[in-house]
Amino acid sequence: MKYQFNDPKIGAAFNFTSSLQSDRGNFFIEEGMIKILWNRNNRPICFQVDDLSIELQPNQLTTTTFFQQLRLDSDGLPITAFLFNREFYCIADHDQEVSCNGILFFGTQEIPIITIPDSQRRKFDLLLEVILEEFNTVDQIQGDMLQMLLKRLIIICTRLAKSQLIVQSLSNQQVDIIRQFNLLVDLHFKTKRKVKDYASLLHKSPKTLSNLFAVYNQKSPQQIIQERIVLEAKRMILFSKKQTREIAFELGFEDPAYFSRFFKKVAQLSPSEFKAKQVNT
Image 1 (cartoon, rainbow, N blue to C red):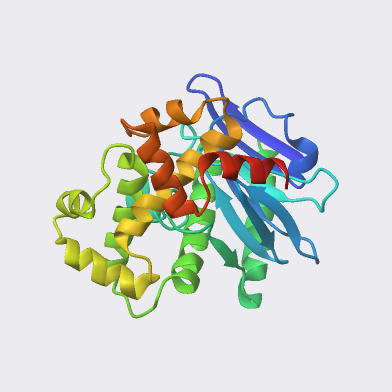
Image 2: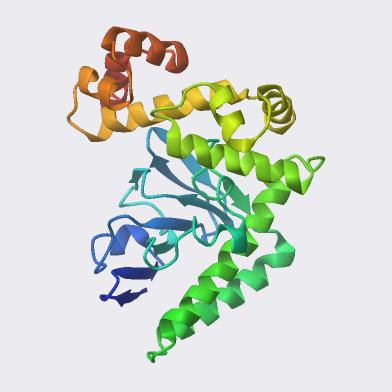
């Protein structure tokens, strides 16, 4: 089952499929898509995001952005997916409405995996029914209605992510600082590598950020910055033909040898060792 909405005037696209493996490559627009992936099977499903192996249990969801590389097993169980681009619904522009940036999307932490509680499964099923019904209702306000329903889905998922993935002792203000830090790192990791740079942007002290993240996930802000740089390097090693020297320069390192040492310190493998390991996996 596949549905798609497109507005050619602005290049907006919102797609739905009950099997991303089967329908991938069959949408009018697929480039630059943000994805919400949902395991609606009664067994776990496995796939890869960048170099990470992900397992979704039944009634779990996760998200990927257009920065991430999603690799699926064509013979695996079907993955239900919502796909939309920035022209249809821009996460950054609507962050005040849904508060998902840095948690559900564009975070620097591990891939967010959200479990749909038994008490909310009917809510998700009903929302899916309404979305599919709207895909079949072609009129002048179809795009507005689909955007509103997508926003509702994102809000529900964000609430679950906050309750399941974030320490409950944190205040809303502290959660917002974490979200903003994650987003800023995603935007500036190529040019800003020190915690004080982000602390300045957030009008906080480096110590405040360090203390906050010690409560949040035991990773230091500096570690998060470094891991984001290495994550981008891994993507380029795996999915581009660029040499280590080119990758180093693109990530703001003037000395390729220093970049290789930095990569090995964070990833525990040199760039060449990492590539060889992925090729042989």
